[in-house]
Length: 205
Image 1 (cartoon, rainbow, N blue to C red):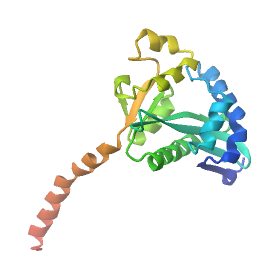
Image 2 (cartoon, rainbow, N blue to C red):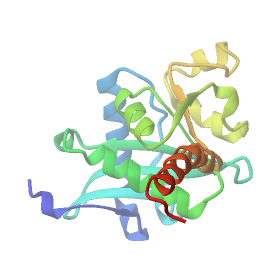
Image 3 (spheres, rainbow, N blue to C red):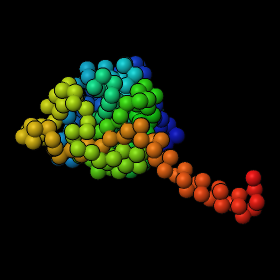
Image 4 (cartoon, rainbow, N blue to C red):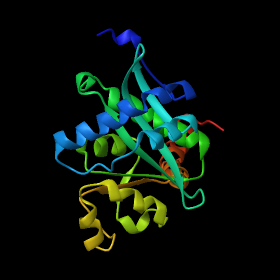
C-alpha cells in the first residue's frame, strides 16, 4: 500500500457514499472483538458525514477509517464515537491520526463543550489518555436520554440496564477544556521561582 495516498480529512458530503462500508467495518469489528459496539445504520452515518460531524481516512478513493462527533445536553457535551480502521490498515498509527482529527473537529465546532468517549477498546483508551482524557464514572457524562438510547444497538445493553446506567463493560472517559488553564497555572510558581533565582544570581532587574 502507498502511505502517501492515505489522507485523514474532515468528511464532506461526497463521502456519504461510504456509509454502508463504514457500517460493515463497525459490525465486523464487533464480531472480531467479541465486545459491544452499538450498531449504526447507513442513514445515521450518512447524516453525520453530510452534517460536517465526521472524519474519514482514505487510501486514494478507498474508505479505510472513520469516526464522528455528536453534540449532547444542549451543547454541554460532545461525544467522539465510531472510531474504526480497516483491518488491513491497522498497526500503522492510523487510529491515532483519526482520533486526533476528530478531536480537532470537536474543539473547532464546540470549543467550550466537554468531550467524552465510552469504549471497550484498550487502544482507544490509551489514545484518549495521551490526549488528556481521564476515566470517569457514567454519572459525570451527559444525562441526555437520546445518547443512552443509542446504546440499545449494543450487545451489552442489558448490562447497562441492570446497573441502572451506572456502569457497563465500556469505560467512560472525559476531556474538560476548562481544566487546561489550571494545569498550566500549576507550572507558574515553579517557573517564577527559577526566574527570580536567576535574577538574583546575575543581578538582573
